Image (cartoon, rainbow, N blue to C red; front, side, top):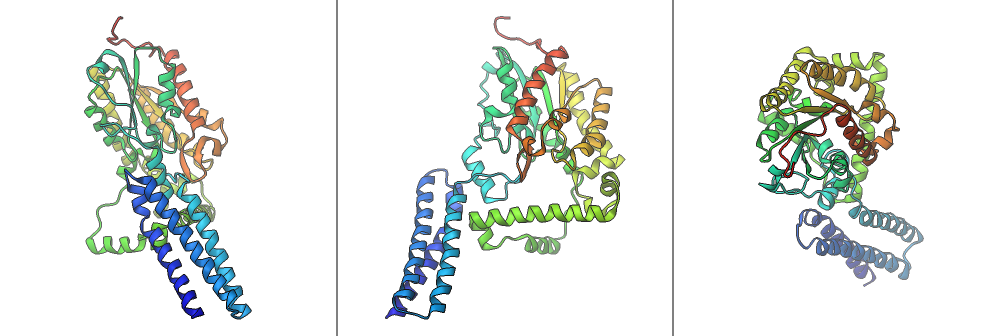
Length: 400
């Protein structure tokens, strides 16, 4: 009889824990009743904790050996710690730079809201938008503000706050967009642009570094090697620890391998086989850089053809080990070419260097700009536009 009650408690612990893990996608993906799924998940975890306590109490009450009781207490303490961490991370939105982690998906659920065009911005209302001075800012996740909880903290919104009445800043940032994508986004935007701002980051050339499609058998093998365990896919705490440790591991491996090579970062990236798919590598290969510049030139031709001023904002990589390299070997050559084409360039490098690394980044796991760097960029960019006589714009504002 004592064993039966203990077994029932252990089975209940297993079932409640499994239920809590299985409904993780429901909690993350439910557009409605999200609070209900959260309540069910927390309730299941608490019930599992209670079942574990009942199991330990049963062992103690029926005077099992001290070893069995001690081991059960230890296991229960570990499980209780897991439950508390799991509940904590259920409500801890934290971006990792990619949307793969559960905490990143939670952040998107809480803070990412888009308009009917798919942009993290207010609705575009026509014909009202054609009666304002419109600044179209095109870019990727740096522009969209990944990791920035409140859109008003982004540099695009800071710029909007400094512009006079009658001006409207449109944020055309799309996470994962590369330069050809951004060009299409600009062409497809329904409102008239009176100033085009292209925000460039080093991964905008990623489309040129992707390897050709693999055979089906190799794809299956690769997929098997990258599949996540059940616990990683369904537990917030385990998922966070797993990706945090993987990120640290990759950083240490890169540092160790780079130190082993005893070469400059430039030589290491240019000649090392393992870095071929890095965006940084593209800019060091003349043919790849030329192809990327041709795609940037499409913006120039479009702006010139439409008689619209174009300004390019260049963001460096924001880690201390790459920020100087990305400016010297990527942004400065791009800026030189753009200026030859008569394009005004705003380089964020000096602004970013003024801040310590972890003040310029969203967090220690995410390489996107922090709210502090967004604010500084928006403020300085407004001054930059005024100093270069780009502002005020010559556009059909009602009443002018």
